[in-house]
Length: 396
Ligand code: NAD
Image (cartoon, rainbow, N blue to C red):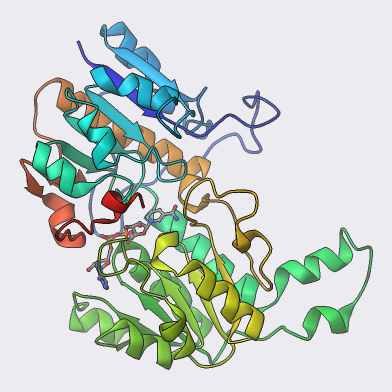
C-alpha cells in the first residue's frame, strides 16, 4: 500500500463553499492539438467543485482510501517542522500544485527515501529539483494541457487590463466613489495596432497568439523551437531568434516559457532596459524568470508602463514583497491555472496518473517530465536541466 502526501492551498477563509456561482462547467471534447482529456477509470467529484484546496483533496480521498492507501493532505509546507516535511520520510508519492508549491528540493528528496513519483497537479514542475529526481530515478509527471487555455485567457485579460488601465478606472467608481474620467484615461490606450509578442509559443504561448490575432495587432514570438511555417503564416507572426530581439520589437510582451536554467532571472535590468520606454510585461509563466527588483525599478522610472501576472517567488510571497505595492501593477495571486474549470481537468489527470502508477502501468508519455533517470515525454521537449543550476536546486 502506498502513502501519498498531497500539498494543497488552504480552504477559503469563509470555509469550503456549500454552493457555487454556476451549476456546471462546459464539457470539452479534447485539447487543441488532439490530445485527449484525462481518462481516469472513474472520478469521485462533481466537475465545477473546489478541488484544489485542502478539503477538496483533488477528489482523491475515496479512491485512495478504499483501496487501502494512505492519503495525507496538508497546506503546511514551509520549513523542516512543516507537516509536508514531517510526512516525507515514508512517502511514496508527493502531489503538489504550482499555485501553492511544495518545493521538492534536493534536501527534501534526500529525506524521502521511498519517494518514487512526484505529480504536479497542473503544469510546471520547476518546484521539483529535476536533477535530484533524475539522480534518484523518481518519476515526475504533470497534467499536460489541463490549464493551458485557462492561463492563456488570464494573460489576455491582464494585457487588456494594463493597456486599457482597467484596475484604476474600476477603483475610481467603486472604492473611491468618483467619476474621474481624465484620471482614468490618462494612462489608457487601445491594444489595436500595437506590437505584441510572446516569449515561448508552446501550448499557452500559441493559444495567446491565437486569441490576440483578432485584435488587429502585429504578432511576434521567440521560442527555442520554431512554429510550423503554416502556423506562422496563418497568424502573420514574426519570429525572433532570442528574447532580446523580441523584447526590443514589442510594446507588449507576454511570457510563457518554463523556468529552466536559461530563463532563470532572464529579465534583468539590462534586458528590461533595452525595451521601448512604456512597454508592458505580463508574466504568467514563473516569477523567477524576472529579476524582482529590476521590475520594480522599471515601473518606478516609467521604463515599463505596466506589469501584470500571477506568478511570484516565493509562493506565497511575504507581506512586504515589493510586487504587492509597485506602481502600475495588475498582479493577481497564482490563480490563472486553477479556475474551477481547470481543477476538474487536473484532478482527473492526477487520478489517471495515480491509477496507472498504482497498477504498475506506464504513465502517458504526454504527462511525463522525468522518467527512468532522464527527461522524458513532454519533459524532454519542453524542459532542460544543466549542472547544478536547475531552478529546483536553488529553491525556485
Ligand atoms: P509547453 O511545454 O507547451 O511550452 C513551453 C514552450 O517553451 C515550448 O515551446 C518550448 O520550446 C519553449 N521553451 C523552453 N525553453 C525555452 C527557452 N529557454 N527559451 C525560449 N523558449 C523556450 O508548456 P505550456 O503548457 O505552454 O506552459 C509553459 C509554462 O507556463 C509552464 O512551464 C509553466 O511554468 C507555466 N504555467 C503557468 C501556469 C499558471 O497557472 N500561471 C499554468 C500552467 C503553466
